[in-house]
Image 1 (cartoon, one colour):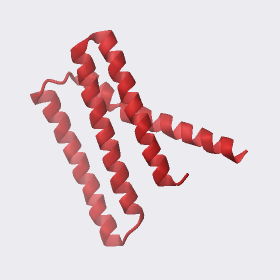
Image 2 (spheres, helix red, strand yellow):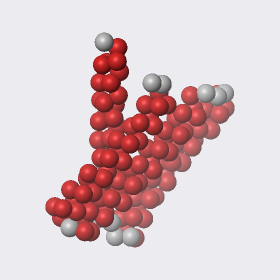
Image 3 (cartoon, helix red, strand yellow):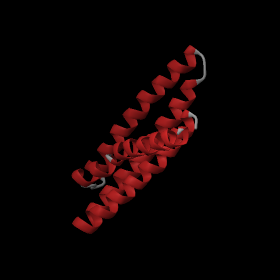
Image 4 (spheres, one colour):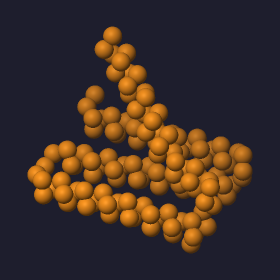
Length: 125
């Protein structure tokens, strides 16, 4: 499996982690917490997919193209911060459940990377 395939496979793990987090939040704390977690999880998937697309484009290309894509990463981060601010301060997402949903990106990356590493280790035996 090449690196791009691995990054794309991790997207599934990020989405699954977000879905589990939203379901647990809904069951444990109700609809508003579940919805806030779900919105955070959706943002996590969008953020990860944006990173994957930009990073994969950076892998090939001239120095100028890579510099422009590095700028695109900075813009992506600024858009993420703006989205978090709007969702929490203007649209009423609860901060703690929202952060739990957004954290699905980290959980998904770790779980996906562990699964890929285990699969590759098994295939090389």
